[in-house]
Length: 147
Image (cartoon, rainbow, N blue to C red):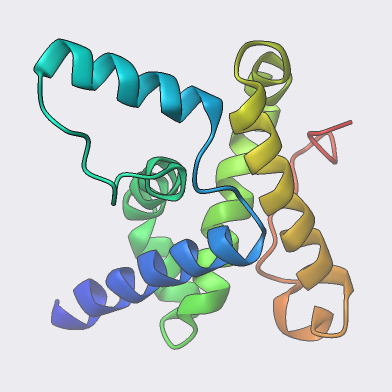
């Protein structure tokens, strides 16, 4: 049991690292608006640790948590690969459901952030480390969800 808990925490840490490495911004105009409204409505100062990386990461963490048994059974000794699988699977699921294309219009900054992550997944699957990561990158049924 403790092995799986430790594993998923490492996966979360890797997800956060990949969000940063992909070049996802820490602040967006959407987040600025959320902060403004939150501070206005609550009268409390926004916690600066609550940045765009955290908001995006929490969504992928939840997705990874729901699939933790599969991630653990496939990559229990490779949390970085499990993180890439979670990220690419999260994006693929959104793509298969048509949500990526909806985001392009309705949530442009989230769309752009996910597109950066997708590009990083693609690089890992096809670049110099492709042999290490190609089996971890999950692709939607219809291919690239950003086209």
